[in-house]
Image (tube, rainbow, N blue to C red; front, side, top):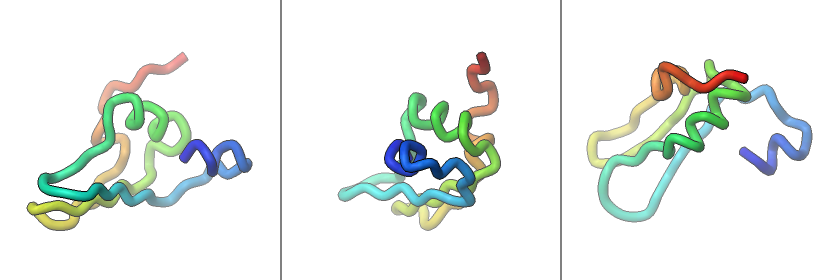
Length: 67
């Protein structure tokens, strides 16, 4: 995300988050805030033991910080 933003991209449709190993995954709070600042309607795609999940970033961080 940081690389895309620094290259001038700021209109995101979706992002996939993956990790090696066991359980279900989700971005940390700081990452959620950055995602919210640039594209709150972006879809977040994750996969884990519970299957594939697709959520809006705004659903993960219902009360984001705003300047």
